Length: 130
Image 1 (cartoon, helix red, strand yellow):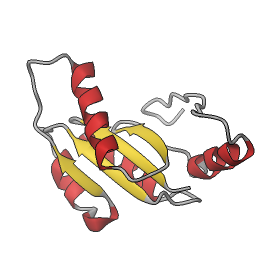
Image 2 (cartoon, one colour):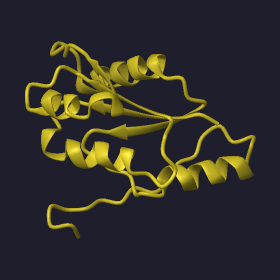
Image 3 (tube, one colour):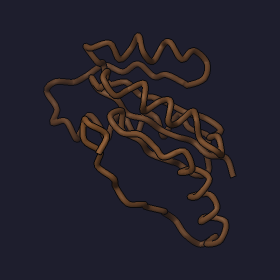
């Protein structure tokens, strides 16, 4: 199966490198990583451009007249339309994956071919790493 990681971002500069690096450094690499930036006004775009062709960057335009969740869903939709993966993994720009995430989810999907979605637990890590 072809896997895609879709990252949506808006002004997550402080966390963005960790986010993208976690997607790039999987034990089972994704076939594509698509990042939709929703018109960030911080240093997000320069960070994302620094990855070159290791990611596909979609530079969107932020619609400040919309509620944040509407912009986020539009970002995910645009990234989904650009995706070619059979299995889609979603990641927010201020989050990160454990290194084995794609590998473990794909293993689960292989063992449960009728599954339509796999969801894992959320771990919250504070600014001290705890």
